[in-house]
Image (cartoon, rainbow, N blue to C red; front, side):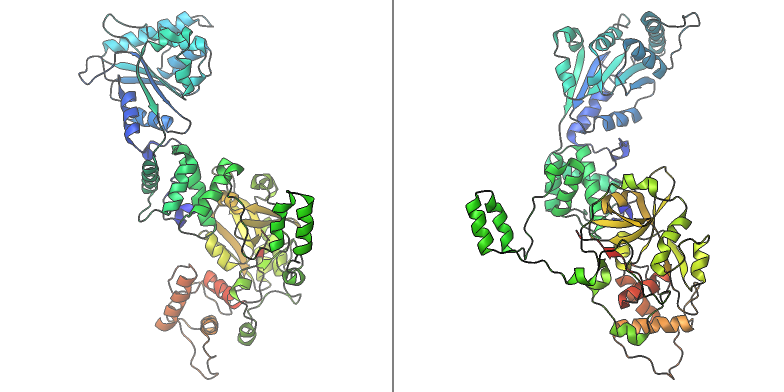
Length: 580
Protein backbone atom coordinates (compact mmCIF):
# COMPACT_ATOMS: atom_id res chain seq x y z
CA UNK A 1 0.00 0.00 0.00
CA UNK A 2 2.91 2.38 0.63
CA UNK A 3 4.13 2.14 -2.98
CA UNK A 4 1.84 4.91 -4.29
CA UNK A 5 2.60 7.06 -1.24
CA UNK A 6 6.32 7.10 -2.11
CA UNK A 7 5.89 7.27 -5.90
CA UNK A 8 6.76 3.62 -6.53
CA UNK A 9 5.33 1.27 -9.14
CA UNK A 10 5.95 -1.91 -7.12
CA UNK A 11 7.32 -3.16 -3.83
CA UNK A 12 11.07 -2.44 -3.88
CA UNK A 13 11.90 -4.55 -0.85
CA UNK A 14 10.31 -7.91 -1.54
CA UNK A 15 12.46 -10.79 -0.27
CA UNK A 16 11.73 -12.84 -3.42
CA UNK A 17 14.99 -13.45 -5.37
CA UNK A 18 14.06 -11.25 -8.34
CA UNK A 19 17.13 -10.85 -10.63
CA UNK A 20 15.89 -7.38 -11.74
CA UNK A 21 16.73 -6.12 -8.26
CA UNK A 22 20.17 -7.72 -8.10
CA UNK A 23 22.62 -5.16 -6.74
CA UNK A 24 26.00 -5.92 -8.25
CA UNK A 25 28.55 -4.89 -5.69
CA UNK A 26 32.12 -5.82 -6.50
CA UNK A 27 31.78 -8.99 -4.44
CA UNK A 28 28.52 -9.93 -6.16
CA UNK A 29 30.12 -9.49 -9.59
CA UNK A 30 32.92 -11.82 -8.54
CA UNK A 31 30.39 -14.35 -7.26
CA UNK A 32 28.48 -14.30 -10.54
CA UNK A 33 31.73 -14.73 -12.45
CA UNK A 34 32.44 -17.86 -10.41
CA UNK A 35 29.05 -19.29 -11.31
CA UNK A 36 29.61 -18.55 -15.00
CA UNK A 37 32.98 -20.27 -14.74
CA UNK A 38 32.99 -23.53 -16.61
CA UNK A 39 29.68 -23.29 -18.48
CA UNK A 40 31.27 -22.62 -21.88
CA UNK A 41 31.12 -25.52 -24.29
CA UNK A 42 33.99 -27.98 -24.53
CA UNK A 43 35.03 -26.70 -27.96
CA UNK A 44 34.76 -23.03 -27.06
CA UNK A 45 37.68 -20.68 -26.52
CA UNK A 46 35.59 -18.67 -24.09
CA UNK A 47 36.66 -20.72 -21.14
CA UNK A 48 35.26 -23.58 -19.13
CA UNK A 49 36.67 -25.27 -16.11
CA UNK A 50 36.48 -28.82 -17.36
CA UNK A 51 34.36 -30.14 -14.48
CA UNK A 52 34.71 -30.43 -10.75
CA UNK A 53 33.01 -28.38 -8.04
CA UNK A 54 32.50 -24.63 -7.70
CA UNK A 55 31.67 -23.54 -4.16
CA UNK A 56 29.67 -20.38 -3.37
CA UNK A 57 28.95 -19.66 0.30
CA UNK A 58 27.56 -16.76 2.26
CA UNK A 59 25.59 -15.95 5.37
CA UNK A 60 21.81 -16.12 5.37
CA UNK A 61 20.30 -13.37 3.24
CA UNK A 62 23.48 -12.17 1.53
CA UNK A 63 22.03 -12.75 -1.95
CA UNK A 64 23.29 -16.22 -2.96
CA UNK A 65 19.99 -17.40 -4.43
CA UNK A 66 19.41 -14.09 -6.22
CA UNK A 67 22.84 -14.35 -7.86
CA UNK A 68 21.99 -17.91 -8.86
CA UNK A 69 18.75 -16.75 -10.50
CA UNK A 70 20.72 -14.05 -12.33
CA UNK A 71 23.19 -16.70 -13.46
CA UNK A 72 20.35 -18.84 -14.83
CA UNK A 73 19.27 -15.90 -17.01
CA UNK A 74 22.79 -15.56 -18.45
CA UNK A 75 23.46 -19.19 -19.31
CA UNK A 76 25.09 -19.37 -22.75
CA UNK A 77 23.55 -21.34 -25.56
CA UNK A 78 24.46 -25.00 -25.54
CA UNK A 79 24.56 -25.35 -21.76
CA UNK A 80 22.18 -27.72 -19.98
CA UNK A 81 21.38 -26.80 -16.39
CA UNK A 82 19.84 -28.87 -13.60
CA UNK A 83 18.79 -26.83 -10.55
CA UNK A 84 18.11 -28.59 -7.25
CA UNK A 85 16.68 -26.25 -4.62
CA UNK A 86 15.64 -28.85 -2.01
CA UNK A 87 18.67 -31.02 -1.34
CA UNK A 88 17.28 -32.92 1.67
CA UNK A 89 17.16 -36.04 -0.46
CA UNK A 90 18.45 -39.59 -0.41
CA UNK A 91 20.96 -40.74 -3.02
CA UNK A 92 18.21 -42.31 -5.16
CA UNK A 93 15.98 -39.23 -4.84
CA UNK A 94 18.84 -36.94 -5.80
CA UNK A 95 19.71 -38.96 -8.90
CA UNK A 96 16.04 -39.07 -9.85
CA UNK A 97 15.78 -35.27 -9.47
CA UNK A 98 18.91 -34.68 -11.56
CA UNK A 99 17.58 -36.87 -14.35
CA UNK A 100 14.24 -35.06 -14.25
CA UNK A 101 15.95 -31.65 -14.44
CA UNK A 102 18.03 -32.78 -17.44
CA UNK A 103 14.93 -34.42 -18.99
CA UNK A 104 16.66 -37.78 -18.96
CA UNK A 105 14.36 -40.81 -19.20
CA UNK A 106 15.37 -44.29 -18.22
CA UNK A 107 15.35 -47.04 -20.87
CA UNK A 108 12.10 -48.96 -21.22
CA UNK A 109 13.93 -52.07 -20.01
CA UNK A 110 14.49 -50.49 -16.55
CA UNK A 111 12.78 -52.27 -13.69
CA UNK A 112 9.89 -50.76 -11.71
CA UNK A 113 12.29 -49.60 -8.96
CA UNK A 114 15.42 -48.31 -10.74
CA UNK A 115 18.74 -48.69 -8.98
CA UNK A 116 21.54 -46.16 -8.56
CA UNK A 117 23.29 -47.82 -11.53
CA UNK A 118 20.21 -47.35 -13.75
CA UNK A 119 20.13 -43.63 -13.09
CA UNK A 120 23.91 -43.16 -13.50
CA UNK A 121 23.98 -45.13 -16.77
CA UNK A 122 21.15 -43.00 -18.20
CA UNK A 123 22.81 -39.80 -16.98
CA UNK A 124 26.19 -40.83 -18.43
CA UNK A 125 24.60 -41.52 -21.82
CA UNK A 126 22.98 -38.06 -21.79
CA UNK A 127 26.25 -36.32 -20.84
CA UNK A 128 28.22 -38.12 -23.55
CA UNK A 129 25.62 -37.25 -26.17
CA UNK A 130 25.65 -33.57 -25.06
CA UNK A 131 29.45 -33.48 -25.14
CA UNK A 132 29.49 -34.90 -28.64
CA UNK A 133 27.08 -32.16 -29.72
CA UNK A 134 29.41 -29.48 -28.32
CA UNK A 135 27.20 -28.80 -25.29
CA UNK A 136 28.07 -28.57 -21.60
CA UNK A 137 26.10 -29.56 -18.49
CA UNK A 138 25.96 -27.88 -15.11
CA UNK A 139 24.31 -29.12 -11.91
CA UNK A 140 23.47 -26.40 -9.34
CA UNK A 141 22.50 -27.39 -5.81
CA UNK A 142 21.16 -24.63 -3.56
CA UNK A 143 21.13 -24.91 0.25
CA UNK A 144 23.89 -27.49 -0.13
CA UNK A 145 24.73 -27.35 3.58
CA UNK A 146 21.73 -29.68 4.01
CA UNK A 147 23.29 -32.49 1.96
CA UNK A 148 24.06 -35.72 3.79
CA UNK A 149 27.58 -37.17 3.68
CA UNK A 150 26.55 -40.15 1.51
CA UNK A 151 24.82 -37.80 -0.96
CA UNK A 152 27.94 -35.62 -1.17
CA UNK A 153 30.01 -38.73 -1.88
CA UNK A 154 27.63 -39.70 -4.69
CA UNK A 155 28.03 -36.18 -6.15
CA UNK A 156 31.79 -36.67 -6.10
CA UNK A 157 31.37 -39.91 -8.01
CA UNK A 158 29.31 -38.09 -10.63
CA UNK A 159 32.36 -35.97 -11.44
CA UNK A 160 34.05 -39.22 -12.50
CA UNK A 161 31.82 -39.20 -15.58
CA UNK A 162 34.34 -38.03 -18.16
CA UNK A 163 36.00 -38.50 -21.50
CA UNK A 164 39.73 -38.87 -21.96
CA UNK A 165 40.03 -35.07 -22.27
CA UNK A 166 37.27 -33.54 -20.17
CA UNK A 167 34.90 -34.14 -17.30
CA UNK A 168 31.29 -34.12 -18.40
CA UNK A 169 29.55 -32.47 -15.46
CA UNK A 170 30.22 -29.20 -13.65
CA UNK A 171 28.68 -29.07 -10.15
CA UNK A 172 28.00 -25.79 -8.33
CA UNK A 173 27.31 -26.00 -4.59
CA UNK A 174 25.64 -22.97 -3.00
CA UNK A 175 25.20 -22.85 0.74
CA UNK A 176 25.72 -21.22 4.09
CA UNK A 177 29.15 -20.97 5.79
CA UNK A 178 28.76 -24.36 7.46
CA UNK A 179 29.12 -25.94 4.00
CA UNK A 180 32.82 -24.97 4.09
CA UNK A 181 33.11 -26.59 7.51
CA UNK A 182 31.48 -29.79 6.22
CA UNK A 183 34.02 -30.10 3.42
CA UNK A 184 36.85 -30.00 5.97
CA UNK A 185 35.79 -33.38 7.37
CA UNK A 186 38.34 -36.15 6.73
CA UNK A 187 35.75 -38.39 5.03
CA UNK A 188 35.04 -35.63 2.47
CA UNK A 189 38.66 -34.84 1.65
CA UNK A 190 38.42 -36.37 -1.83
CA UNK A 191 35.50 -34.08 -2.66
CA UNK A 192 37.27 -31.04 -1.20
CA UNK A 193 40.24 -31.67 -3.50
CA UNK A 194 37.91 -31.41 -6.51
CA UNK A 195 36.72 -27.91 -5.59
CA UNK A 196 38.31 -25.82 -8.32
CA UNK A 197 36.90 -22.43 -7.21
CA UNK A 198 35.64 -21.12 -3.89
CA UNK A 199 33.94 -17.83 -3.15
CA UNK A 200 32.37 -16.44 0.02
CA UNK A 201 29.84 -13.58 -0.10
CA UNK A 202 30.36 -11.03 2.65
CA UNK A 203 27.84 -8.48 3.94
CA UNK A 204 27.65 -5.01 2.38
CA UNK A 205 29.58 -2.05 3.68
CA UNK A 206 27.69 1.04 4.91
CA UNK A 207 28.23 2.82 1.58
CA UNK A 208 27.12 -0.29 -0.33
CA UNK A 209 24.02 -0.59 1.86
CA UNK A 210 22.98 2.94 0.89
CA UNK A 211 23.66 2.23 -2.79
CA UNK A 212 21.73 -1.03 -2.47
CA UNK A 213 18.66 0.78 -1.07
CA UNK A 214 18.93 3.46 -3.75
CA UNK A 215 19.23 0.82 -6.47
CA UNK A 216 16.13 -1.11 -5.41
CA UNK A 217 14.06 2.04 -5.09
CA UNK A 218 15.14 3.15 -8.57
CA UNK A 219 14.18 -0.23 -10.08
CA UNK A 220 10.76 0.16 -8.40
CA UNK A 221 10.24 3.53 -10.11
CA UNK A 222 11.40 6.00 -7.44
CA UNK A 223 12.89 9.31 -8.54
CA UNK A 224 14.30 12.16 -6.49
CA UNK A 225 15.86 12.10 -3.02
CA UNK A 226 15.80 8.91 -0.99
CA UNK A 227 12.81 8.65 1.38
CA UNK A 228 15.31 7.91 4.21
CA UNK A 229 17.31 10.61 5.95
CA UNK A 230 21.03 10.08 6.64
CA UNK A 231 20.69 9.01 10.31
CA UNK A 232 18.00 6.55 9.26
CA UNK A 233 20.29 5.02 6.62
CA UNK A 234 23.10 4.65 9.15
CA UNK A 235 20.70 3.03 11.59
CA UNK A 236 19.40 0.66 8.89
CA UNK A 237 22.91 -0.52 8.03
CA UNK A 238 23.79 -1.06 11.68
CA UNK A 239 20.61 -2.98 12.53
CA UNK A 240 20.59 -5.02 9.29
CA UNK A 241 24.35 -5.67 9.56
CA UNK A 242 24.68 -5.08 5.81
CA UNK A 243 22.78 -8.28 4.96
CA UNK A 244 20.58 -7.65 1.89
CA UNK A 245 17.61 -9.70 3.09
CA UNK A 246 17.62 -7.93 6.45
CA UNK A 247 17.92 -4.60 4.62
CA UNK A 248 14.82 -5.54 2.59
CA UNK A 249 12.82 -6.51 5.67
CA UNK A 250 13.79 -3.41 7.61
CA UNK A 251 13.38 -0.90 4.77
CA UNK A 252 10.03 -2.33 3.72
CA UNK A 253 8.67 -2.18 7.26
CA UNK A 254 10.07 1.33 7.78
CA UNK A 255 8.35 2.62 4.63
CA UNK A 256 5.13 0.97 5.75
CA UNK A 257 5.44 2.65 9.15
CA UNK A 258 6.10 6.05 7.58
CA UNK A 259 3.08 5.60 5.31
CA UNK A 260 0.89 4.67 8.26
CA UNK A 261 1.85 7.93 9.98
CA UNK A 262 1.47 10.06 6.86
CA UNK A 263 5.22 10.77 6.64
CA UNK A 264 7.05 11.10 3.33
CA UNK A 265 10.52 10.60 4.83
CA UNK A 266 11.75 7.88 7.16
CA UNK A 267 13.69 9.00 10.23
CA UNK A 268 15.69 7.07 12.84
CA UNK A 269 12.68 6.67 15.17
CA UNK A 270 10.64 4.96 12.46
CA UNK A 271 13.56 2.64 11.63
CA UNK A 272 14.03 1.69 15.28
CA UNK A 273 10.34 0.88 15.67
CA UNK A 274 10.39 -1.12 12.44
CA UNK A 275 13.42 -3.09 13.64
CA UNK A 276 11.58 -4.06 16.83
CA UNK A 277 8.73 -5.40 14.70
CA UNK A 278 10.78 -7.42 12.21
CA UNK A 279 13.84 -8.45 14.25
CA UNK A 280 12.30 -8.78 17.70
CA UNK A 281 11.88 -6.80 20.92
CA UNK A 282 15.63 -6.66 21.59
CA UNK A 283 15.77 -3.98 18.90
CA UNK A 284 12.92 -1.93 20.43
CA UNK A 285 13.79 1.66 21.39
CA UNK A 286 14.65 2.17 25.02
CA UNK A 287 11.76 3.71 26.94
CA UNK A 288 12.18 7.41 27.59
CA UNK A 289 10.42 9.77 29.94
CA UNK A 290 7.96 12.04 28.20
CA UNK A 291 7.96 15.74 28.78
CA UNK A 292 5.81 16.54 31.76
CA UNK A 293 6.30 13.13 33.41
CA UNK A 294 5.59 13.57 37.14
CA UNK A 295 8.75 13.59 39.23
CA UNK A 296 7.39 10.86 41.48
CA UNK A 297 7.86 8.33 38.69
CA UNK A 298 11.63 8.72 39.00
CA UNK A 299 11.40 7.32 42.49
CA UNK A 300 10.52 3.96 40.95
CA UNK A 301 14.16 3.53 39.96
CA UNK A 302 15.25 4.10 43.53
CA UNK A 303 12.80 1.57 44.96
CA UNK A 304 15.02 -1.28 43.83
CA UNK A 305 17.85 0.13 45.96
CA UNK A 306 16.00 -0.40 49.26
CA UNK A 307 12.85 0.16 51.26
CA UNK A 308 14.32 3.20 52.96
CA UNK A 309 14.67 5.13 49.71
CA UNK A 310 11.18 4.04 48.69
CA UNK A 311 9.80 5.43 51.92
CA UNK A 312 11.55 8.76 51.38
CA UNK A 313 10.28 8.92 47.80
CA UNK A 314 6.73 8.23 48.90
CA UNK A 315 6.84 11.04 51.46
CA UNK A 316 8.44 13.66 49.25
CA UNK A 317 6.89 12.90 45.85
CA UNK A 318 3.25 12.04 46.38
CA UNK A 319 1.45 10.58 43.41
CA UNK A 320 -0.26 13.02 41.16
CA UNK A 321 -3.76 12.21 39.91
CA UNK A 322 -4.07 11.78 36.15
CA UNK A 323 -6.28 14.17 34.23
CA UNK A 324 -9.92 13.14 34.28
CA UNK A 325 -11.50 15.74 32.02
CA UNK A 326 -11.50 13.52 28.95
CA UNK A 327 -12.56 10.44 30.85
CA UNK A 328 -15.46 12.30 32.37
CA UNK A 329 -16.52 13.83 29.13
CA UNK A 330 -16.06 10.70 26.99
CA UNK A 331 -17.27 7.49 28.62
CA UNK A 332 -15.69 4.30 27.34
CA UNK A 333 -17.67 2.82 24.48
CA UNK A 334 -17.28 0.08 21.93
CA UNK A 335 -19.00 1.87 19.10
CA UNK A 336 -18.61 5.00 17.04
CA UNK A 337 -19.13 8.35 18.76
CA UNK A 338 -22.88 8.59 19.25
CA UNK A 339 -25.15 10.82 17.24
CA UNK A 340 -28.13 12.76 18.59
CA UNK A 341 -31.19 10.58 18.91
CA UNK A 342 -33.18 12.83 16.62
CA UNK A 343 -32.34 10.87 13.48
CA UNK A 344 -29.95 10.93 10.54
CA UNK A 345 -27.16 13.45 10.40
CA UNK A 346 -27.87 16.73 8.65
CA UNK A 347 -25.44 19.43 7.60
CA UNK A 348 -25.36 22.05 10.32
CA UNK A 349 -26.75 25.46 9.40
CA UNK A 350 -24.27 28.28 8.98
CA UNK A 351 -24.93 29.83 12.35
CA UNK A 352 -24.69 26.61 14.33
CA UNK A 353 -21.65 25.34 12.40
CA UNK A 354 -19.78 28.55 13.08
CA UNK A 355 -20.61 28.54 16.76
CA UNK A 356 -19.86 24.81 17.17
CA UNK A 357 -16.58 24.78 15.26
CA UNK A 358 -14.08 22.66 17.20
CA UNK A 359 -10.32 23.02 17.40
CA UNK A 360 -8.50 20.74 14.91
CA UNK A 361 -7.18 18.46 17.65
CA UNK A 362 -10.71 17.71 18.78
CA UNK A 363 -11.98 17.34 15.24
CA UNK A 364 -9.41 14.66 14.51
CA UNK A 365 -11.04 12.02 16.69
CA UNK A 366 -12.88 11.21 19.86
CA UNK A 367 -10.52 9.70 22.47
CA UNK A 368 -11.09 6.56 24.45
CA UNK A 369 -9.72 6.66 28.01
CA UNK A 370 -8.26 3.17 28.27
CA UNK A 371 -5.57 1.66 26.05
CA UNK A 372 -6.99 -1.52 24.42
CA UNK A 373 -5.05 -4.70 23.76
CA UNK A 374 -3.63 -4.90 20.24
CA UNK A 375 -4.71 -8.16 18.60
CA UNK A 376 -3.04 -9.99 15.70
CA UNK A 377 -5.02 -9.18 12.57
CA UNK A 378 -4.62 -12.77 11.36
CA UNK A 379 -6.78 -14.06 14.23
CA UNK A 380 -9.50 -11.53 13.37
CA UNK A 381 -9.69 -12.25 9.64
CA UNK A 382 -11.87 -15.41 9.95
CA UNK A 383 -14.55 -13.26 11.63
CA UNK A 384 -14.68 -10.64 8.86
CA UNK A 385 -17.41 -10.97 6.21
CA UNK A 386 -16.82 -11.53 2.51
CA UNK A 387 -20.15 -9.80 1.74
CA UNK A 388 -19.92 -6.00 1.88
CA UNK A 389 -23.63 -5.78 2.68
CA UNK A 390 -22.86 -7.25 6.10
CA UNK A 391 -20.18 -4.59 6.61
CA UNK A 392 -22.65 -1.83 5.63
CA UNK A 393 -25.07 -3.18 8.23
CA UNK A 394 -22.27 -3.23 10.84
CA UNK A 395 -21.68 0.45 10.06
CA UNK A 396 -25.38 1.40 9.95
CA UNK A 397 -25.93 2.05 13.69
CA UNK A 398 -23.34 4.84 13.56
CA UNK A 399 -25.77 6.75 11.33
CA UNK A 400 -28.93 5.60 13.17
CA UNK A 401 -29.81 3.27 10.31
CA UNK A 402 -31.36 -0.19 10.35
CA UNK A 403 -28.60 -2.72 11.00
CA UNK A 404 -30.50 -5.61 9.42
CA UNK A 405 -31.48 -4.20 6.03
CA UNK A 406 -31.37 -6.60 3.09
CA UNK A 407 -30.19 -3.68 0.94
CA UNK A 408 -28.28 -1.32 3.27
CA UNK A 409 -27.67 1.34 0.61
CA UNK A 410 -31.36 1.48 -0.36
CA UNK A 411 -32.28 1.78 3.31
CA UNK A 412 -29.77 4.63 3.67
CA UNK A 413 -31.18 6.42 0.64
CA UNK A 414 -34.60 6.44 2.29
CA UNK A 415 -32.96 8.49 5.08
CA UNK A 416 -31.29 10.90 2.62
CA UNK A 417 -27.90 9.18 3.01
CA UNK A 418 -25.86 7.63 0.23
CA UNK A 419 -23.27 4.87 0.04
CA UNK A 420 -19.90 6.10 -1.20
CA UNK A 421 -16.96 3.93 -2.30
CA UNK A 422 -13.47 4.84 -3.45
CA UNK A 423 -10.32 2.88 -4.31
CA UNK A 424 -7.85 5.77 -3.94
CA UNK A 425 -7.73 6.56 -0.24
CA UNK A 426 -4.54 6.53 1.80
CA UNK A 427 -3.87 6.68 5.51
CA UNK A 428 -3.31 10.47 5.76
CA UNK A 429 -6.61 11.11 3.92
CA UNK A 430 -8.36 8.58 6.13
CA UNK A 431 -7.12 10.41 9.23
CA UNK A 432 -8.23 13.74 7.82
CA UNK A 433 -11.65 12.44 6.90
CA UNK A 434 -12.04 11.12 10.42
CA UNK A 435 -15.29 9.25 9.81
CA UNK A 436 -16.16 5.56 10.28
CA UNK A 437 -16.17 3.44 7.16
CA UNK A 438 -15.49 0.08 5.57
CA UNK A 439 -11.99 -1.08 4.67
CA UNK A 440 -11.53 -3.70 1.98
CA UNK A 441 -8.83 -6.13 3.12
CA UNK A 442 -7.28 -8.65 0.77
CA UNK A 443 -4.24 -10.89 0.85
CA UNK A 444 -2.27 -11.43 -2.36
CA UNK A 445 -4.42 -14.27 -3.69
CA UNK A 446 -7.30 -14.40 -1.24
CA UNK A 447 -10.88 -13.09 -1.53
CA UNK A 448 -11.80 -9.61 -0.35
CA UNK A 449 -13.00 -9.17 3.23
CA UNK A 450 -14.65 -6.13 4.75
CA UNK A 451 -13.94 -4.52 8.12
CA UNK A 452 -15.90 -1.70 9.77
CA UNK A 453 -13.35 0.91 10.88
CA UNK A 454 -14.53 2.81 13.97
CA UNK A 455 -11.30 4.06 15.57
CA UNK A 456 -7.85 5.29 14.56
CA UNK A 457 -4.76 6.67 16.26
CA UNK A 458 -1.07 6.97 15.38
CA UNK A 459 -0.30 3.27 15.86
CA UNK A 460 -3.56 1.31 15.80
CA UNK A 461 -6.99 1.01 14.20
CA UNK A 462 -10.19 -0.22 15.84
CA UNK A 463 -12.40 -2.57 13.83
CA UNK A 464 -15.98 -3.34 14.85
CA UNK A 465 -16.97 -7.00 14.53
CA UNK A 466 -20.53 -7.56 15.71
CA UNK A 467 -20.84 -5.76 19.02
CA UNK A 468 -17.15 -6.03 19.86
CA UNK A 469 -14.32 -3.62 18.96
CA UNK A 470 -10.94 -5.11 18.09
CA UNK A 471 -7.70 -3.10 18.00
CA UNK A 472 -5.05 -4.00 15.42
CA UNK A 473 -1.77 -2.38 14.43
CA UNK A 474 -1.67 -0.08 11.40
CA UNK A 475 1.37 -1.97 10.15
CA UNK A 476 -0.61 -5.22 9.98
CA UNK A 477 -3.57 -3.40 8.44
CA UNK A 478 -1.35 -1.80 5.79
CA UNK A 479 -0.35 -5.20 4.45
CA UNK A 480 -3.94 -6.02 3.49
CA UNK A 481 -5.53 -2.61 2.79
CA UNK A 482 -4.91 -1.16 -0.66
CA UNK A 483 -6.94 2.03 -0.44
CA UNK A 484 -10.51 0.78 -0.91
CA UNK A 485 -12.85 2.60 1.47
CA UNK A 486 -16.62 2.98 1.79
CA UNK A 487 -18.83 5.12 4.03
CA UNK A 488 -22.23 6.78 4.29
CA UNK A 489 -22.53 10.46 3.40
CA UNK A 490 -25.23 13.07 2.99
CA UNK A 491 -25.21 14.85 -0.35
CA UNK A 492 -26.29 18.51 -0.29
CA UNK A 493 -29.63 19.34 -1.83
CA UNK A 494 -29.46 19.40 -5.62
CA UNK A 495 -26.11 17.60 -5.76
CA UNK A 496 -25.12 16.51 -9.26
CA UNK A 497 -22.18 14.09 -9.58
CA UNK A 498 -21.60 15.34 -13.13
CA UNK A 499 -21.14 18.97 -12.05
CA UNK A 500 -19.21 21.19 -14.47
CA UNK A 501 -17.80 24.68 -14.53
CA UNK A 502 -20.55 27.30 -14.62
CA UNK A 503 -23.05 25.05 -12.83
CA UNK A 504 -25.48 26.60 -10.35
CA UNK A 505 -28.08 25.38 -7.91
CA UNK A 506 -28.56 24.63 -4.19
CA UNK A 507 -25.49 22.35 -4.01
CA UNK A 508 -23.19 25.04 -5.44
CA UNK A 509 -24.79 27.59 -3.10
CA UNK A 510 -24.06 25.28 -0.15
CA UNK A 511 -20.50 24.75 -1.38
CA UNK A 512 -19.85 28.48 -1.48
CA UNK A 513 -21.42 28.94 1.96
CA UNK A 514 -19.19 26.27 3.54
CA UNK A 515 -16.04 27.65 1.95
CA UNK A 516 -17.07 31.11 3.16
CA UNK A 517 -17.40 29.78 6.71
CA UNK A 518 -13.87 28.39 6.55
CA UNK A 519 -12.58 31.69 5.20
CA UNK A 520 -14.48 33.69 7.83
CA UNK A 521 -16.37 35.55 5.11
CA UNK A 522 -19.78 37.07 5.92
CA UNK A 523 -22.86 35.24 4.72
CA UNK A 524 -24.13 36.46 1.31
CA UNK A 525 -27.05 38.85 1.30
CA UNK A 526 -30.50 37.38 0.83
CA UNK A 527 -30.94 39.19 -2.49
CA UNK A 528 -27.48 38.22 -3.81
CA UNK A 529 -27.27 36.67 -7.24
CA UNK A 530 -27.26 32.85 -7.35
CA UNK A 531 -23.76 31.45 -6.92
CA UNK A 532 -22.21 29.68 -9.87
CA UNK A 533 -19.18 27.41 -10.10
CA UNK A 534 -17.26 30.16 -11.84
CA UNK A 535 -13.49 30.53 -12.12
CA UNK A 536 -13.22 32.23 -8.71
CA UNK A 537 -15.19 29.53 -6.88
CA UNK A 538 -13.34 26.76 -8.72
CA UNK A 539 -10.02 28.30 -7.62
CA UNK A 540 -11.22 28.32 -3.99
CA UNK A 541 -12.33 24.69 -4.31
CA UNK A 542 -8.92 23.77 -5.77
CA UNK A 543 -7.15 25.49 -2.88
CA UNK A 544 -9.25 23.51 -0.40
CA UNK A 545 -8.69 20.24 -2.29
CA UNK A 546 -4.91 20.74 -2.41
CA UNK A 547 -4.82 21.54 1.30
CA UNK A 548 -6.64 18.28 2.05
CA UNK A 549 -4.74 15.95 -0.29
CA UNK A 550 -7.58 15.63 -2.83
CA UNK A 551 -7.39 15.79 -6.61
CA UNK A 552 -7.37 19.54 -7.26
CA UNK A 553 -9.76 19.66 -10.21
CA UNK A 554 -12.05 22.36 -8.76
CA UNK A 555 -15.08 20.06 -9.15
CA UNK A 556 -16.76 19.26 -5.81
CA UNK A 557 -17.38 15.54 -5.36
CA UNK A 558 -18.31 13.46 -2.31
CA UNK A 559 -14.80 13.61 -0.81
CA UNK A 560 -14.72 17.41 -1.11
CA UNK A 561 -18.08 17.78 0.63
CA UNK A 562 -17.14 15.26 3.35
CA UNK A 563 -13.83 17.01 4.00
CA UNK A 564 -15.72 20.31 4.27
CA UNK A 565 -18.04 18.74 6.85
CA UNK A 566 -15.02 17.50 8.77
CA UNK A 567 -13.26 20.87 8.64
CA UNK A 568 -16.40 22.66 9.88
CA UNK A 569 -17.02 20.19 12.70
CA UNK A 570 -20.41 19.14 11.36
CA UNK A 571 -22.53 16.93 13.59
CA UNK A 572 -21.56 13.55 12.14
CA UNK A 573 -20.09 10.24 13.32
CA UNK A 574 -16.41 10.49 14.14
CA UNK A 575 -13.63 7.93 14.46
CA UNK A 576 -12.67 7.04 18.00
CA UNK A 577 -9.07 7.49 19.04
CA UNK A 578 -7.99 4.54 21.24
CA UNK A 579 -5.54 5.54 23.94
CA UNK A 580 -1.96 4.40 23.39
